[in-house]
Image 1 (spheres, rainbow, N blue to C red):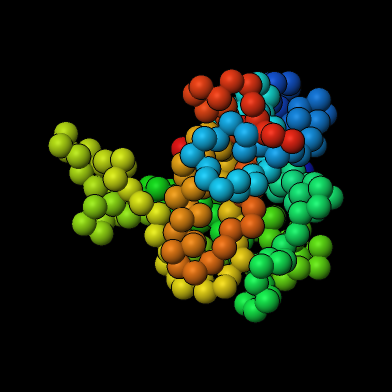
Image 2: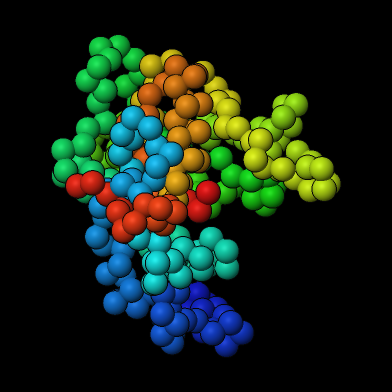
Length: 248
């Protein structure tokens, strides 16, 4: 315990600790910014690419403190935010259930009892760096689903590919750089009758989650829900975040 405390104090001398949401000194996330993570809501209203009414729930709009928190976690690598965001996404699951959401597919009488929690696929660079951060979010979602009495586990069931079967991050454009416009999401495993919860970081147009959903359905599964940290309004969507917004 003493060694751990000493290590934290030493780390603060080397890299001063500040709130990820507002830069308040000597705290990972201040109480005011933590409140931004306690208002889960449906956020797919400003995502025009989502077809067929896929419900997506998150913590709110991708702006101000919530935007800074996401960037600190995703871009700056603030791993001290992992547990905080995990707890926040567990709260999203709670809100979905409280709002009448179910992890049972009433249309299917047969099929696996276990729900798969599937992270949106990451770019090759992030994969090579180790387990993608969004997979940690998926862990938290799966644990909370299980706490609601529904068996669930994380499955890295989706990947990205481009033209010619190459990974999206390796598809060259005419300028010699990777061309992600032709990337597609593909299933790595069969999903016959499988119920899926998709997890991503930020929702914009919904294109990424829609491609994930299409890949799941092509593999025989069905998507019940999308879970994200935040939602950015898509161009032309006005101020809508939901009817009731991943940076793609």
